[in-house]
Image (cartoon, rainbow, N blue to C red; front, side, top):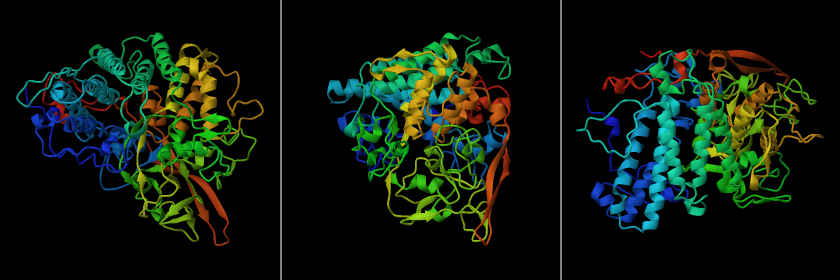
Length: 607
């Protein structure tokens, strides 16, 4: 057996990724140049070791994961920035991904941190800290281990399970891949064990640390994936090899898996700990429908805004955030997403017209069915407020080096700027979601760059999808503190936060009397809009097995031409033809790992 590098751990330089400035637990401890004995003989160093395991959470959904793009540019959400580098997102978009060139970050980062968890659990009892603290820290480490295994699972399917073992470069490491069922059982058992010793929710300086509600939220996501078409009865489209089927899912379909997923989401909802921030005035007290949708991503600035009308939100804008990846203060997101004139570098990608046009009008109806007229040249007018909080379009106002009134011009022709289509953007749009209105990529003001890894909106959508698949669209139930819930109610709550008009019927534009198929499409559309650029779409289209349509299609932009008179004309233009192959339902295991052991079999269609 050859030595396998990814199980090794480095105990030096541990403060490099934790020198955060957002006054949180990540910024509390510096640990440098220490060996294992030193780390676990001092309670502060021990806590710092655990903190280091948190640092890589969110790496897989980071918008610049591949150096010039992330999962959003590897699917039908956004166009990647063209460069001389052929990165993983480019390979997925063009159908050229292979084991030799795909990034190995999911493999190496996850196993590095899984080993760290094992080292921590094996040695923490030596630390001179309170037993009560050890109990909580052990539970956090068990969840973190489960989290990294989940990241591996949704990339590759079953992978080697290490248990509590700590291997060195001198050991023969078992490399046989666990089955999908074994992975599910292991992750759930770790989450359940961790939850028993954790508080339901954290606050203050402990915000971001693992709680029992986070454990249950991960189970909700896990069970939803397991019930989905890709895994719930693996089809011949994916593989016909019975041994491979067991690595990628269940051999046969079982409808009861949808009930398990519904129950897992209901468990989180019924805790009554989270809410959607339906706040429709901005922080200056001015009316703005859907402001809460924007504010939740900048929750650190708006925690004190807890009351709106007759409703009180625990934690203000943070009320719906379940798991947060704590990140240092900067203007990183603005640099990734904004236009060049506003300091953007394009590394976060450029939203496709295909997604931009799907946002409904402010009555919740599509652009072709609404009572409001859709104007492609002024796409924000009478639109779902999430549109303007997600998309930068021609004429959108952004921050530019301290000028909050700068208007981005994506039009070509008369007076064209560096932001114009074919100059700054290949699609005619930029991305605004998750950015801060007071920041620019070319300005000195910075703020926390935290990323939301699990939101309450996702749990509601998980619930709606699973309930619709198992019971149908009309099923409702009493979830205790959360009240009555149903697929309709979940969608209505999300659209209420979005700032969409309720309408005379109180349905927020959602059609009544939908069939199961119609509700399924409504839920999928809401996930696509509500969770855009948060790392869900890439995996959603795979688990639904619609990627042969969504990721094997011509993608479009919107070209606006401006004349000297000021008149503008627009047209839909082709940007890129995406290519999808059946192999791409799963990631290939890195070639450099597969060649080290005959036990480590490659995913189908990558040999």
